[in-house]
Length: 360
Image 1 (tube, rainbow, N blue to C red):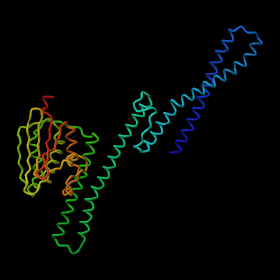
Image 2 (cartoon, helix red, strand yellow):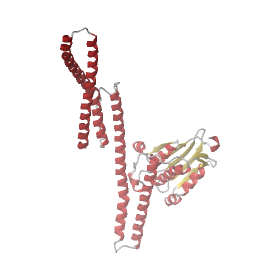
Image 3 (cartoon, one colour):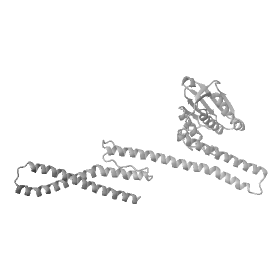
Image 4 (tube, rainbow, N blue to C red):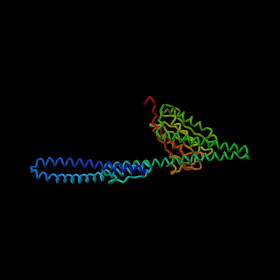
């Protein structure tokens, strides 16, 4: 990096030196031409002319040199130093130091053009710093989430190599490996989906379909899960609830909300699902009688890898609700959470007005 900077400084010095000589020569030429024209029209004898020429030439050189020095100082103070300051800051940012803030020439709100450029670069550095922090946190969280099921699989595998295991223990350990493998697969799937959503690689493919029917189909995918926990499902659907939207994207929302509701509902609890058509939108409510969400947890419930209730952390990866929020944003809807600790939670999804293809 120093070699590149030294090379750039040498080139800059040579360029400035030659520019100074060219400017000096041009100034000398212009001043000389003007003095020659002046002397031509002045009535002087030959002797006076011969005496005036050397003095005139010397004055030309001195004046030209003074003006050149003044111009060089002006350029250095007004142009080169600000550019050098900006270049030094950009070099640091390009090297990965996104906390760099370039000092202003005057102040942040001045009308100086260089200050306007510096302000833009500083704001960009702040944005890049935030993105880098999110990237680092994301990698750290992904590494942790991958490590947990992999460690569990490794432990179960080690235990299965023991000779004195009963058949029941073998089945139990094999079941543990299967569960952790499913968790690992689900995590990778969610990471890939989230990456596509956040990089705008998914565009809604809207078509008219029956939302109530889709919700029934998604709910039936979890039939075994709710039956294992003896959960009562209370469903209120309006059969003819048609919507013009991307069915595949919205299935991500319902699958994650249903999965969360079942996960956080205790044995023998209740899950409620309501679909209502209203004047300007369709409302889908998914409620559970689980542990509820504290106000502090509610502030971060849609953040990546955030898991408010650690007692259920083994069953999740903290990406489900992040996916839900991202999909809702893409389709132009909204989602809210109402919860009471110890009583349960209700997720309310607001979808856009029931628009059919014929209305577009």
